[in-house]
Length: 410
Image 1 (tube, one colour):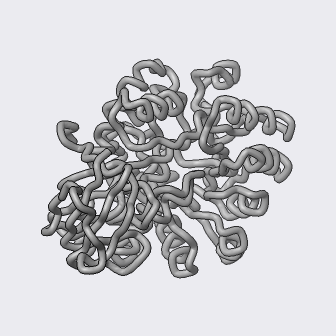
Image 2 (cartoon, helix red, strand yellow; image 1 turned 30 degrees about the horizontal axis):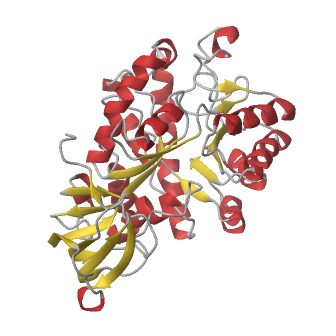
């Protein structure tokens, strides 16, 4: 892999102040040097990549997606369509994500994530780096249960998630995931919006059950993510070792104290809530889902504002699945909502989708453009530091210093 010198109009490395008239040196797919052009020497014989009129940022990371290939918002369809069809569609979603500037994603609940991760890593399928939990794990009657199905069907491989009850079953399911080679474990400690017979403020799993998951995951150095919307379920997750909280609709001051104490990351997924409330009725979202989303929307956005003001690390994650309502490729919407609704600056929103989102996976080699990191970066003709909506339209996408967006479509 040849050495490259990338001339940048402005460089945002994800960690420091933006630098104008900057230079990025890439060797063997990693950042060798970065900074003001006058301070960074261009190695002899290096190929020059001219983005002198562009803003260069680290590649974007969506810390909460589902690579299921779904094309409907009907939960019954999610459990009746074949996994093979979903996997085929998800390869198209991966191409869209990469073309949109997402060079890494965290798949927090799918039956196809492991195979897709390996296909991308082998170079067989173009896409972002995939970090996956495999199927999520829920208690019986919990958010990951298929409430509309007979129990025997919901507990099969066709269900939305694996069901586990009692600390011993939870420990065994965690060990099964480790055996499969997952990058993290995904559990549910509250009910949710698109699960029929529970509610976001209802806690799920006991302390002993949650600890069984986190003990087994941390034993092998992988994190645990928890779907957690109500404050009691968020606190139970954080008190028992969960590393990332997904959604967080109803957060109180004790939650913020626990985030600070544990250094956990918050992934609010405002995008799916925004789309459910503003467009869900036109896309077949069940009435119970629409009602719960409408009820929780204001509290969800307010909780995220207060988390931001409290200094909680907030990562970009959309909860996008693939249907027209929540399609992969439009994932930069989350950064726009961070700016427009939460009060982040453009730079903070970009860093939420780069450095902070990279905290959510067991890989500390991407998320910034600092020496030694993987050279995943984007070039923008319009400056996202002035208008965050520019994130929707990268002019060029690079993974490990190689341009990868050409010919992908969007």
